[in-house]
Each structure stands twice: as structure tokens, then as C-alpha cells.
Length: 196
Image 1 (cartoon, rainbow, N blue to C red):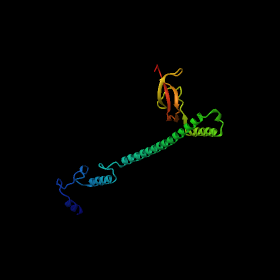
Image 2: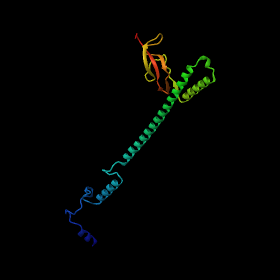
Image 3: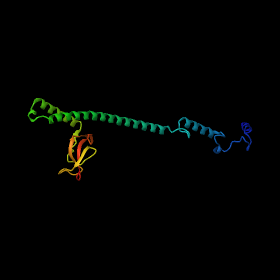
Image 4: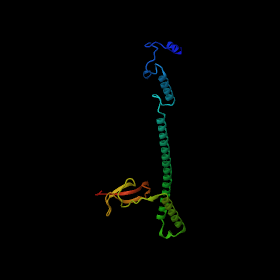
């Protein structure tokens, strides 16, 4: 009797209400597969994995990379600012050392043993030591080939005896370097080939 009730509830074969092959049921037609497909799609969309959903992992990785780049850039800018400030102070110290060396250079030979002259010499020596501790060394220019990275040419003169053309013939103001770069270029006179 229960079989008869089930048979009566089923639509006749070939009618519009007869379910098709379950493998060919699309989501629009309904069926168990459609429910499973709909649930998977809904969960994928909710989790951000659907066909139209953005790639959150890719966005996160890009944002993380941008953050790391920003941190590196900020650290580099901070280091550059610190080095620039140190360089300005060191150049001012070099200018003070120039003044002391000019004062010592203008001393009369008989005044070299005076207490004040020895104090000036000691102060100049301490400044040289302080600069050396900071990695600042004088640029050796005289007789060397002219290098625009370390020398500033003030004048060009015919090459004197024993000086090669293109070399530094005279140093007008001492230059200083810090590491491999000029802190203050040496001001020089350059020898040229031929007569003036």
C-alpha cells in the first residue's frame, strides 16, 4: 500500500516534473547537486575564494611588501639625515682647524715656544685626532692626477718642471675625505700641457 501511495505521488515519466539525470542537473534546475553547488559557492564567496572574490592573500602580501619597503626607505632617509648632519659639523670643525693652522703658520720662530703658541698647537692636534676618530683624513693632492671627485680646480697653469700634465701642481686649500667620498674637496692648481 505504501508503494501505491509513492507511485501515485510521482509524476508520470516524460512529464515536465520528471527529474532529469542527476549528473546533468544545473543549479538553476535545482536538485541535491544544485544545493551542494550553491552551498560551496556561498561558502567560497564568504571566505573570499569565489570566482569574483578578490585575492586577499595577494593583497596582504603586497601590503606587507610595501610596509617593509617603507620601513627600509625611512631607515635609509634617517641614516642619510644623520650622516648629513655629522658631515656639516665635521666641515665646521675642519674650518676651525684651518684657522688654527693659519695662526700656527704665521708664528714668528722665536714665539713658537711661548705657552699660548703651544696651547694652539695642542688644540690643533686634538682636533686632528678627533677628525681621525670620525674617519676624516686629509686628501693627498700634490703631484697626484686631478680627480674632480676629490679636487676643485681653481686655476690651470703650464706644467712646472717635474709635474706631469693633468696633475695637481699646487694645493691652495687642504681637502678632507670621509671614507671613500670627499667631505671637502681640495682646492688645487692643475698643470696643463704646453705653453700658456
